[in-house]
Image: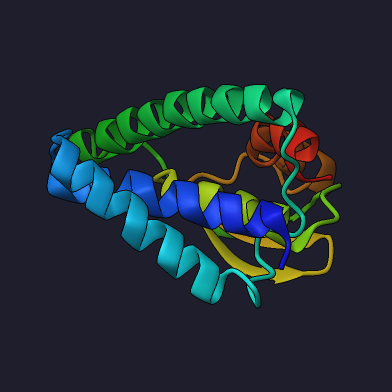
Length: 164
C-alpha cells in the first residue's frame, strides 16, 4: 500500500467526518480518526486516484492558490450569468468550442473539466486526449488558442504545478 494514498484518503475522510458532524468534541474526533483510519486502511490499498497527486509544500501552496482562483472565477461567472438573466436584451452567442490543455495527468484533466463545468456559463462536454470540448454561453472567439486562453489557462497554470 502506498502511504501517500492512505494519507490522502484519511485526510479527506476526517475532514468530511468533521464537516458532517459539525463538532470538535473529543469523542466525535476520536471516533472520526478511528473510522477514517480503518476505511483508509481497508480501501487505500487499491486506490489509484491519488497516484498522480504531489505531496510537496509547493503543490500544497498551489492548491490553495488554485482554490482562491477558482472561487474568484466562480463569483465572476455567477455575476455574468445573473446579469444575462436579468437583462434579456444582452446578446448571447452559445456554442461549443475546442480547447487544448497541457495537463498530462488524468486527475489534473478531470479537475480542470469539473472546474470549467462548475463555473456558470461553461460546461465541459467531452475530453479527448489533450482536447476539451466546452459549451460556452457566449462564444467570443472560434480560435482554439484564444478560447483556451479565455477558459482553460486560468485554472491550468495552477493545476500543472499540482499534478504534472
